[in-house]
Amino acid sequence: MKRKKQWEQALEAFPADAVAEKIESTARVLEGMNYEPVLLLKTPGFLRMGKRALCDEIGRVVDLLPEQMLAAGFGLGANYEEWKARHIQLLLYHYGLLCRLRDDEPAAWDTIYELYEDD
Image: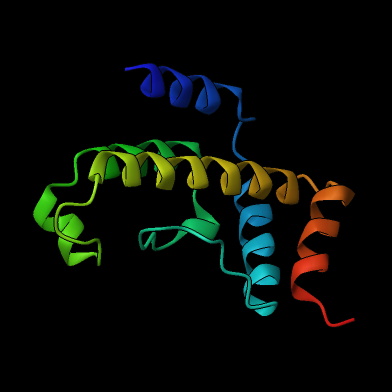
C-alpha cells in the first residue's frame, strides 16, 4: 500500500504530456541512438507513452499473475511483488527522464549522450 501511494505521488508530479509532435520527435532521436531504457519487463511503446499510458502500464504490471511472471522469465518462487515494484520504479525513473528529454532539458540529454554516444 505504501508503494502504491508513492507511485501515485510520482505520477501526479510528472508534467502534462508534451505535444504529440515533440513526443514523436524525441522518440525518433532516441531510437536513432538505439536507446533502450533498462526495464525488467517488456514495455512496448515506452518511448511514446504519455502519462495516461504510463498509469495503464503500471496497472498492468501490478495485475500480472505468477504464470505471467514465469512466462516473462522470472524464476519459480521468485518474489514477484518485489520484481514488479522494481520494474515500476524503473518505469517511473525512465519516464521522468523521458519527460525531461521532451522538454529539451540539456542535463537530461547529457545523460543520454554520456551513455549512448561514442567517445
